[in-house]
Each structure stands twice: as structure tokens, then as C-alpha cells.
Length: 241
Image (tube, rainbow, N blue to C red; front, top):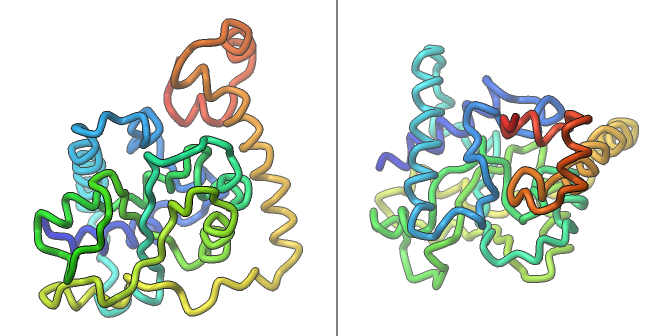
């Protein structure tokens, strides 16, 4: 597992392939795991993330894009830890982050890097972080620092963590600086842009909340009937017919 290259590919994907959150919320349909992270069986999580990383890598190679140099990564984003199995599914982090986080407290799959267990297996950590093997490691682009921090502030279970750089073992020191809380998570100064984002993404939140049972459980006849008439964002994104 070449974790440094995976981080480079993740940042490059966000910056050069899918840079606009308002297009698909950093959730490229072709990479979709077709379910929320917490719904993936624990024994399958590593493989699901591995497959997603491989698919993303293959597209980048086909596009022949230059990866962001390692020493420039810190200028584009930071790493965050997500305990997406420990979720109340209350939608608060999703709303606070304007859909950067989904309603199950997971980041968008375009940003997924690895599971905590995968990094443990390559001796990535400098010491025992006492994390669970279900923790998801993901990229937060610079434009989303404020929104990710908003999710941290409202999460009932404290399941979002900005790591500290000293947790990274010496052999991976080249990427140590992206394992740290951003220097600022202040609200963007352009209020007009914020309000536009709110209007746009709240509509997507409503679709996600209203139709989630259809996509994942198919447990509501009434909601299923409504979804046959409407073509909401999440239904299109997850490729459901």
C-alpha cells in the first residue's frame, strides 16, 4: 500500500478532476460504494476502500494527470479521521457542513484514503492512537475546512478528529504535515457565496433525507412511490433505477 501516493491521488482528484462540491458534493457516481459507510460490513470495509482507491487511481492514470507534489499537499488540504460507524444518523453534521459530511457522518467518497486498520498494517502510526479498525481516513480540501469543523462542533458522539502530526511514523514524515488541524477554520468572508451554497445544498439535503430509505432499505412503500415520480439527487448519484 503506497499511502503517500494515495494521498497525492486523492488531493489531485479533488483539485483537477472533481473540484466543485456544488456539482456532485465530491461524490463521483462512478466511484460510489452504493451504500453508506456504516452499512458496509466491517469485514468488507478495507476491500471497499481499496477498490475505490484503485478505481480512482485508474482514472487518473488514464487522464495522464500530474499528481500534486508531496511537498505541496499541505497547501491543498488536511487529513481527518471519521468514526462513521458510531453515528446517530441525525443529520446534524450533514446540515452543519452543508453536505460535505453525509447524514451518516461520513465524508464524501471521493475523499476516502484508507481505513485505520490498513494504516496500522503498514506501521503508519508512531504510537498507539487507540482508534478502532472501523475508522475512515479521508481528505478535507482547503475550501471545506470551515464546513468540516462545523460538523466537529455539532457531532454528539465526537466522531470527527483532526489528528496531530506526531502520530505519523518517521518513515512517512513526508506527509506528516497534512495530518494536523488546519491553521484556520474561520467562516469564509464572502457571505454571498455562503448564502448561495446554503440555498443550493439545503435542497440536496432535503432529497437525501426524504429518500434515504428508498436507496438503502426500501422499507417505505410511500417513499418508494414518491421516488418513482421524482428523480432526486441521491437517487441519480447512487445509480438506482
